[in-house]
Length: 335
Picture 1 (cartoon, rainbow, N blue to C red):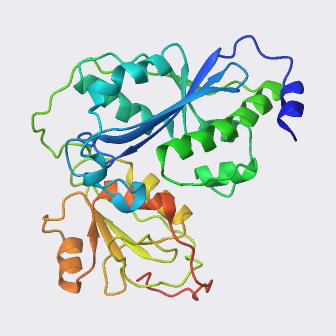
Picture 2: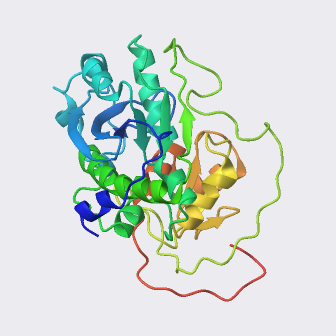
């Protein structure tokens, strides 16, 4: 369907729909409370989802840039970039009076809210719309909830994945037909309220800054029975390389994202969630690598790579496909 055809079939337009949108993407040093934005992009759209303009900036995070192998922004590249307070006014101008649209909008909004709070500025955002939630409302036949899958569904070509400007462009182009489909079908937009942070402290917090226990300390939960991973184990995770489908991943300790949800995301990406650590384990994910738990002790004794949750979650965004498919026969032991 051409752009002109899509516009013509969009009427009548629900009067309850917002009058403007700001499609946003941010790249960050990680996912924790103390992580920072390293780049941000905004595509402003009118009420019908048509692009009005776009804006992009690097942001000096005043710290290590985090997963450079994902966003490609080194310390050298960010050294001369403006600080967030220096670009906050330009960003606010593009967000003011519009619904913030993002793919996994809770994440982008939380990172922006924290940056605004650090700068002692109130973020001009009152509502957000997650395109993952919208795709579910529309019952789009997507294989997963990745941006690339949404883009492929609408024939949008991605040029530079994990570059904020290109990710925002791709999302803007995929959002417009989603918005029109919702209008034609009378689908309620999944709008959520945004409550800006009004204060911020950089003082140390205990427990570890950036995550809250997903379950009570010391509680036990039964392992969920999952289907066999359809991919062979490619071996251990190697630093600065992507995860690969079939890798065996074990988790230890509390996580900021609910453990079962985190495991579901790993399985959806094609990883094997292991309940214990063995010589076959590809990596261990833990927010406390120095804890003397049985899993961390075993991982260190086997030389198993250990990653924090924030780094692992970033890697989940771009898991390399398996070289082959070979479902092993069921066995009494999952390891």
